[in-house]
Length: 531
Image 1: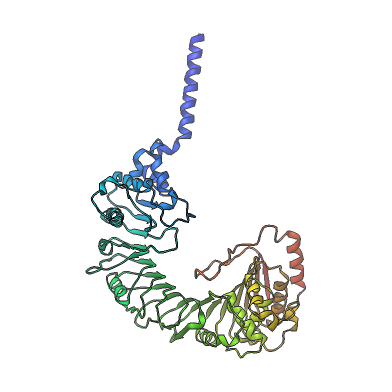
Image 2: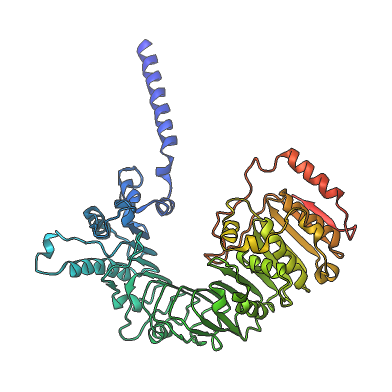
């Protein structure tokens, strides 16, 4: 009997252990499709290491996303520009591509500083070939693999974590420009020379960075990309007056620091969204563009014929200096862009309006209906907001996202001679404002103020608007909402988020809400929503 009891107890323990193992290793019972999806979220090296995990084994050889980044093998702060590519990196790529079994792949990413030496000591290259040839041939084999596997998304970055271009650039194989399966193509720091006819029949997105282009070369690429929807060019020299016809159905064009660009005529194109960051003189002709995001040295930009504009944002990417004569071209730009119903200026643009307000400089009348501001509401921005309200006669909606943090622009203002020239008392600024505000009398219906709303300057602005907006229907105030649409890479350099948890305590919000209720309202039925 004792033996039977021991046997039964042993059997129970065994079953319990098996049940526990099953629970702990439940992942092994998942379908391969689910396991492959899990692998797609792992770095490539970690995905390969799952060969040691029961249930995965060699499943990694079927993954459809292949990503190889040399930054995982070296210190990105390395100061020596002549470092070598780690042999482990090269061997790892060769190993993965040799064992990979899936006949097709979706993604192939390669990030590698081409200035580094590749496979310098590989015995298979002891044939007198130069290091440059060895390097190029090795990369060619990797790219050819991706093209043969009908890759859909190809990302080749030959600059990687460095900023300095290599003396010799990698020559992109012509096979890439005839890959009819490509849907998205990203190229950085290589030579692109179309040979024969470009055949990117499925391509919808093309991004090129630090690649020398000519107007003719770009036209050749576009002519072979009939389905292209989005084109992005960054730091691509050689373009002067590129032609965009209605052939490729491009809807979105992004241009950043293409220094040789002189004129952009989109009259014959169907481009609806244009983002451009430029620091040289540039003429823009874009009658069909509906959304325009423009940044850089705005005083150098001349725009003509823009009747279709619906949504516009502008951003200085250089500091505003005290010289009101310098902004005559900027005034003309604002006049041209005021036809856009939606408008989003940057904080430096508001400083220009501040300057105009303080010196009583003539300001154009703006016809935009919806304005979004993103500011640290400090002393130097108050006259700018006043100027905008005074001259935006048709303004119906005003949204202000207020953030706290370093006041970089105010220090710049002080350094550039603004402070002695325009010194004024910012305390209780709105109580001293006079003059007519047509939008407050006849148009402004909605006000939205988000972020750090309990700052003294913000509270004074709220009081001013409630007291003077005579047809205001609703004012929405929230400490939680933040600006979602950061359209241009230079639009907002600060890391913007909601105020810290201890910023708006319950006591502070209670005091704030009591102040709101005590403020007089021009229209008593105006709704205040505090969230």
